[in-house]
Image 1 (cartoon, rainbow, N blue to C red):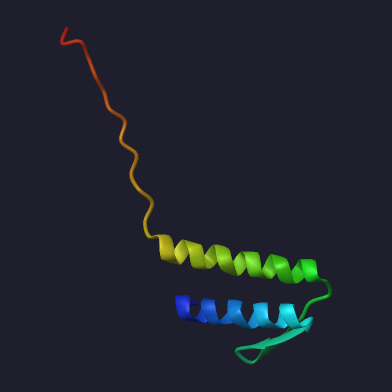
Image 2: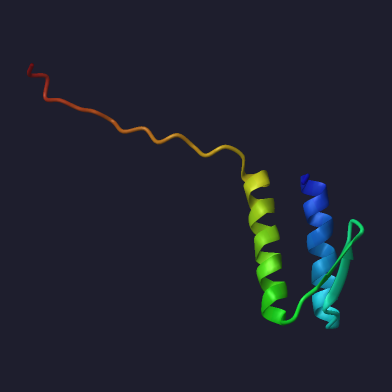
Length: 71
């Protein structure tokens, strides 16, 4: 999924959760959550995917190697 699609899904799920609605329709699929904890887990998963897409590549780790000049 693209960043825009994930953001739209997150926003729909948040609105439904805040209204107390347990059934959400996204992209032609209907999902019914049994508990608020399930909705929270779904939101956390979407947030993690958005975070992966927005942070870019991981920085490289460089380990310096030093000597006293003696070989």
